[in-house]
Length: 164
Image (cartoon, one colour):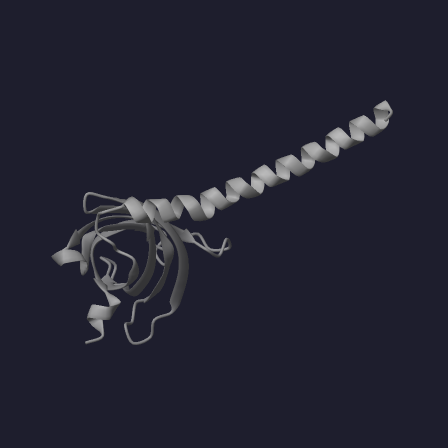
């Protein structure tokens, strides 16, 4: 084998090895670590769909729904907010992606709009109450209607409990 063939063989085997190691790391990050966290986590499970209704100081009513996926202390999910000044004619719909953490019955959630053409952010600090069927706390957000940062108390209820 000449030097050129040796270099090409080395480069190709290096690329294949790097790709193989990358795929293994993706497997560990996306499958093994979440499974392990879920297995060893012994705290409250807040996975599921939650709903809330709020009215801001500026008189804007919002119906909110969030779906939480939990792996140990890590929380991810999506939420939808439908809002407007008239509760019978809600006009703004925001779809948000969510991430956060749960620790000792307290949850921090950060949300931002999925649609990059709309600026929407929020942060929540919530406490798990009533054995895991309510989340109470403060919701701080950038209002897309008033363009002001606002905060309000919020009470989330598991959707399954709401449908009775």
